[in-house]
Image 1: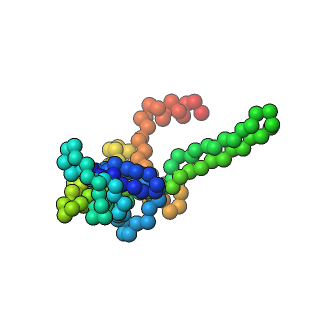
Image 2: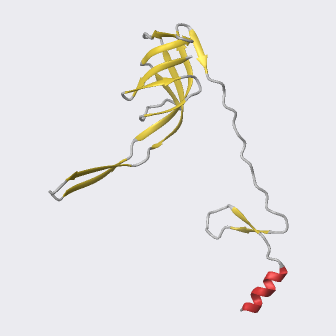
Image 3: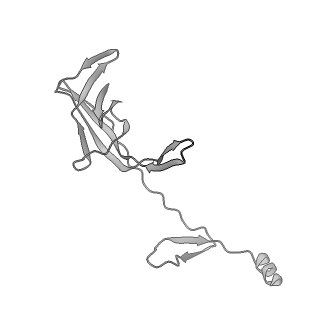
Length: 155
């Protein structure tokens, strides 16, 4: 099951679970609806032009800015050079559902990953951050006694 949608002047072929980067979209509570559906394919090999009854929904994953593109204008023998940069805003959207003709195709739910917490190594002391307002702690390993003695002799 896939659909062809139009967003931001471009066309995208999407299926439930796909993540696409479109131009900045207005979202309502993290949800985006694409009403401009051009075609829907419910079965292998059959593509149906979608009317006004098709709807593709998605959830906003992130909003950001793309990589910088340098635009360089140059005219030879005229001492003319102009350099400009551009970063396009984007919205990353995960397609959650394609609804057409009373049918609804949904993406499987994502499993939330739990954050792993690293424990301090044994035998080492834990130092607090020197910067005010920071709560992160750093594990510091103890130097062996032989290295300490060698370091004192060098001084």
